[in-house]
Length: 311
Image 1: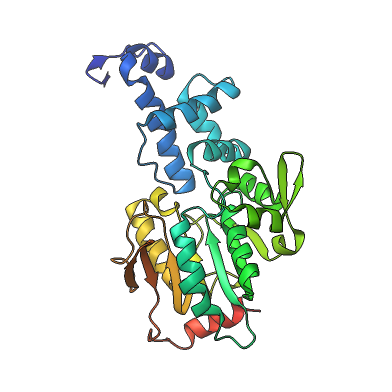
Image 2: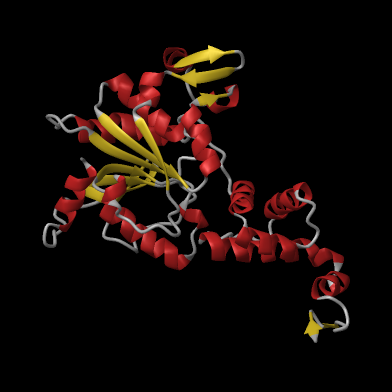
């Protein structure tokens, strides 16, 4: 048989043979490609930088911790072991976040979007979804902002990683998470315990966490409260989806919005305007999407989702 232009003896085991003929310069690409393919198959995440040093290092850290020397063995174990799959996921996806990350977007939220959403309401709180919340800094930033300005909101937050959600539920952070937060808000909303800071319980309770894999889960999901949102933040998540899933997720996020609802993504995320009927605006905080007020309702479809989600 042939691989890479070099004949491999069929008398050897496949893993041994593969290791023996791979040029040293291609081993990193081989490791990352094998695992990236399994990530895409198991988790519906597209690791576009499958040959990047960061991904190779992440995969090798997992292999080292578990005494695995063959990436095929890691691939097989990922397929059968939920805990290991979660561990690999945590290593290869970037969960870098902090309070009020991308301050220009939070300025837009505070001065334009949130007042527009919240002030006209007589009773029902505005509904917000932080999709891809990592360890919770984003939804808690929203909760703090709304508490400061007296906005009545209900915040849902989701992530693919159960480890990240567990950290978010603790609502406790180190100094590095506050690098874009002013000292006033930090003192007002956090209780210091040594070198850690815990969010005030009354603010933490305003956020509800749930696991969502945008690559697999189908939305809207009104039985889980995932529908009828006035505002969705889906930042630094879409970059992990392949083209087909990106198109589907764009349509689903559009459907999850109430009429007139807003969607914010990250500057590094792919554009969504070509996949769904968003209105778009270019602002100082980047591209912003909105669901038009005049979207036709088919047999009460959207109204039904909004009503069920608000229960």
